[in-house]
Amino acid sequence: MSGPGGTPCVCYWHLWVDDQGVSHQQRCELTAFELKGVGPADPQWNDRQPRSEATTVFTVQPVGWVGEWHENPAPQWIVPLSGRWWVEAMDGTRVEMGPGEISFGEDQGCTRDAQGRQGHKSGTIGDAPAVLMTVQLHIPPVRRPGHFR
Image (cartoon, rainbow, N blue to C red):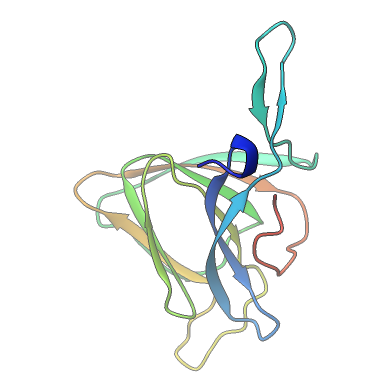
């Protein structure tokens, strides 16, 4: 979790779309941290992202829930608060996540393939609901993995 010189490094999964309209998942890192105080508080590491309008949505996926093939409604950060869930991209990459893991869903504009897959499929794992917090950014998708630093 540390980069060069002790600078923090926070990993996240990025669900993105290539030029052929196929979704993929790639492990990426937030690395643009700056040691700075907030008001009179001691310095802390901050990785400030570009300012944009956003909508926060909390969701509870019931035990056994499966979201068939769909695209994220907007480029969005997804943070599991409790429970576990999985996300499968069109390329077959399946990632399982739990509390404290971060995902960025940016699979808008996928092309439906011959198997009827478009975007991603997701669902809950285990015997507890998955409680997620999403922060939907009102920006166009970039279509390049790891563009957040």
